[in-house]
Image (cartoon, rainbow, N blue to C red; front, side, top):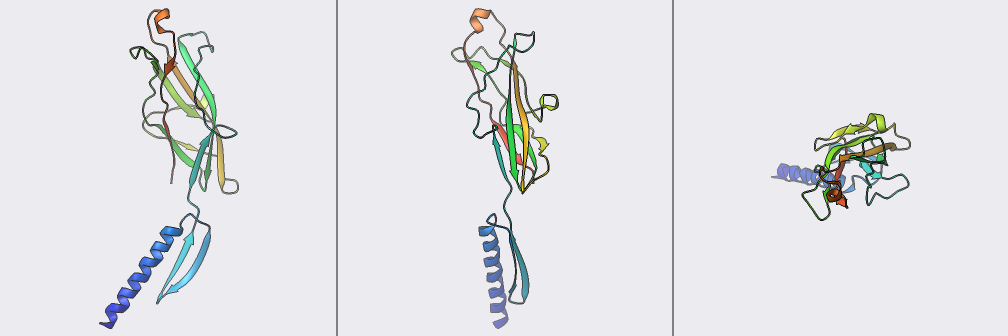
Length: 183
């Protein structure tokens, strides 16, 4: 009977140690070697990986205005905006679209732009097309525990076909992106 109590006490201590690790993970970087009965354990507490995605200088974009002033094709609208990705305790991440981008006329849902590409990359020549399947990216090497990369978000779409007077107006849509740290 005594051996069973010793085993139960040892199991309770293990459970308490595991709970302590779960509760304290992410607090600070520390290491401690502690004897638990006759079983030595080592606990290391580390900061969890954290990703921050924002426009340079902070915040995020409330709206993106697509323009057809670039190039000779006036039916193609596009926008390119800078994005900064910072990762604490890591540098690899992936990006995907939660849903495809659909731009529709504010008052006539039958009028919709054809989305050509939502792209993401370190510059205009390295844009990778985004979809529901995640695409991998990597920030430059960490400095002081944080890696930061400068990227470009690009959206291009074609205006609806039809008579010019009927397609003019405001178009709205939701661009919902998922940024995930690769662990």
